[in-house]
Length: 402
Image (cartoon, rainbow, N blue to C red; front, top):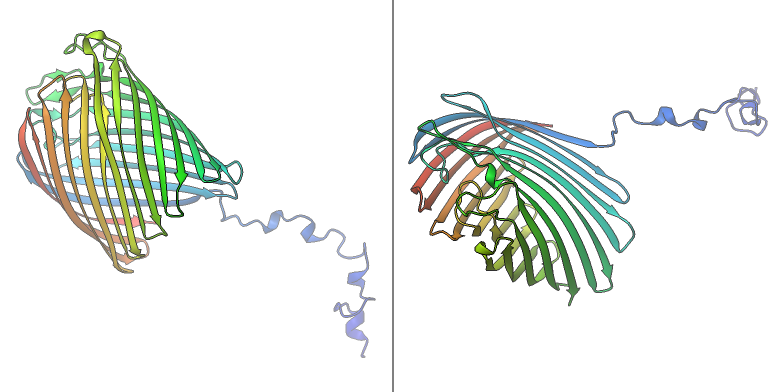
C-alpha cells in the first residue's frame, strides 16, 4: 500500500519508470519548442486609428464646410540593437460642395542600429503627397485648385563617440515635384520648372563640456538641380549650398532640454547672372517637461531654399517660430494649445510673406479605444501678392484607435 503511489509513477523515487532514460517520454515535448511560440506576438507592434471630423471655416474667402476622414497606422519593432519604425497617414476631404479629394498622404520609415557601444547607424525614408485647401490663408484668392506637391527622399547617418567627443556624418537625397495650379478663371499655371532634386551631406562634431552642456559645430554641403530653366529668371537656377553653424545644447535630466545655434548659409548659382545668396541663420529649441502630465515645446528656425511654385525671385529666406503646450488633466481628458509665426522674403524680388496663428483643442476619452476631439484655430497671412487673409476654423470629431 505504501509503495503503490511510487510504483504508479508520481516522481517521488528514483525507481519511477518516468525517470528511466530512454523509456518515457520517447520524444520529449520540450525537444521542439515551436508549439510554445505565441502566435499573437508579431515582429511589429501595430497601432492604428481612424478619425472622422467635421470642420467649419469662416474667413476672407468666405465660408466652407468639410468632412475629413483621417486614417493612420504605426508599426514599431524594438530589438537588442535595432529600432525599426514605419508610419502612414492620409487625409481625405469631402467639401460641402465638390468631389472627394486626398489632401495629404504621408509615409515614412526609420531604422536605428547599434553597431557597438560607441557607434550607431541610422537610416530613413519618407514620401508625401499634399495639396493645400483653396481658400485657406496663404493660398491666393484666385486659386481654385492648389498645386499638388509630391516629395520623397532618403537619408543615412553614422554617429561615433570618442570619449567626450561625438562625430556624426549624414547624407540625404530628396525629390520635389509640383503639379499645375488651376485659377478661378479656368486658366492653368504650369509649375514644372520648380521640380528639383536636392542632395545634401553634413558633418556634426560635439564636445561634452560638462554632464549638462555640449557645444557643437555643423557643416553642410548640398546641391539643387532643377529639371527646367526658369522663365522668370532667364536661366536654370541650379545651385550649390554650403553652411556653417555653431551652438550649444543643455540637458537637465528629462525635465528640460535647450538648444541654440547660429551660422551662415550660402547658395552659389551655376548661372553667373544669378550670382550668389548668403543669409544669417538662427535656430533654437526648448523642451520643458516638469512632470508626466505637462509638456511644452518652443522653437525658432531659419530656412534658405528655392522659392517654390508660389514664390518669386531666386531664393526664399524664411524665419518661423512655434510653441505648443500639452496638458493631461486626468486619464480621460487632455488639453492642448499652439501658436506660430512666420516671415519670408525672396531674393531678386520685392515679394514678402508674413503670417501667424494660434489655436486650442481637447481630447476626451470615452473608453480605451474611442475619443472625442474638438479644436479651434485662427490663421492670418499677409503677402505682397494677395494682401491680408484670415480664417477661423472649428473642428469636431471622433477617433477610433487600437
